Length: 203
Image (tube, rainbow, N blue to C red; front, side, top):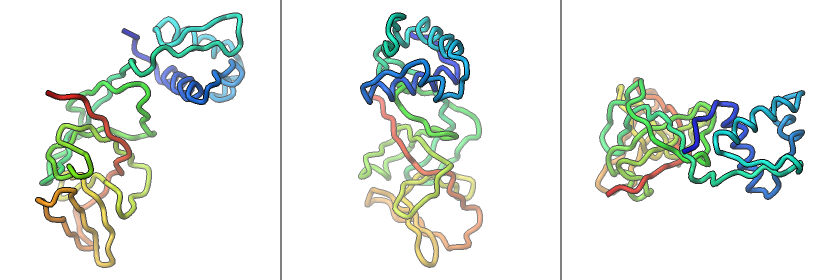
C-alpha cells in the first residue's frame, strides 16, 4: 500500500498524472519550471520520495522515463466536513465527522471541501443519499447550478434559480416542493457550488 504523500509530493504526482494523460512524461527541467525550483536536485529529491513510496518508477538513463504506477489504485483519505440535506435542511458540522478514501486522480479545487448527502431529493440529478459531493467555495453560484446553502443554520444541497424577486432552491425529485426565498432574506448564504461527486459501491 503506497505511503501518504506530503502536499508538494501530491502536487507533483498530480502533474505527472496530467502529463501521462497527454502522453509525454515531463523532464526534470519541466517539473522544476512548473513548481518554481531553480535547482533540479530538489526535484530529484521529491521524485525519489515518490519512488520510495511506490507511486512512480524511474529510469536514470532516460530524461523522460518517469512512469506513474497504477494511479487509479491509489487512495488518499480526505475529511468529510459534515452532512448536507437533499431534502429537509440538516445541520452541517464545523469539524470533520468522517473521512473518505478518494483516488489520487480525483481533482480537488483549492479550498474545496467534501460533504455527505443525506436524502434523495436530487435523485433525478443522479445524486443519492450517501454520496460525497465536492464543493468549491471560490466560484460564483449561477442560476441553474447545484449549490450548498445555509438556511437558518442548516445546510441544503439544491439547484439554484435566481429570480427577479428572490431565490428558489429546487429539488430534482417531484415529491419535494421548491424552497422560495425573498431577495433580502436573512440567515441565508450560499457556501459553494457542487463541482464533483464521488460514490462508492454500497450493499
